[in-house]
Length: 140
Image 1 (tube, one colour):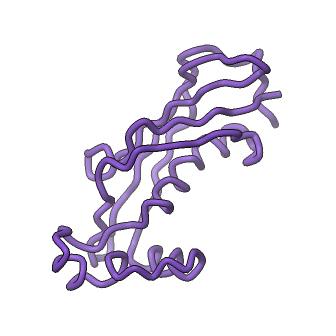
Image 2: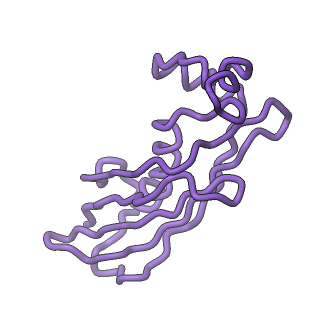
């Protein structure tokens, strides 16, 4: 069921989501995206270039975050703009747990033409990993 512009107000909260990320997740994403940079799968290499461990792909982190918006609208095509600032990498340890990306969102502005701005808060390990994470969404 599509979200109607008439049903939302500034401050409307989207359902929060948690997205687990393991090394296997990163390998699958690398295959799908073609991004085989060793910082995303090789712990030794990641540490040699100054990272604390293997990190998730930035575009993967962005994609997981915007799922909160697409799940809320029920229509991925409703997202007409989306942007973030990368503030901190998602470190993915080589254990059975990996990492978790936590995402919350709320309507920040009502715009013209039945559009809204949704601001997202994206964290992992208690630290913000995406800043200025905003989507403009076309509602019914």
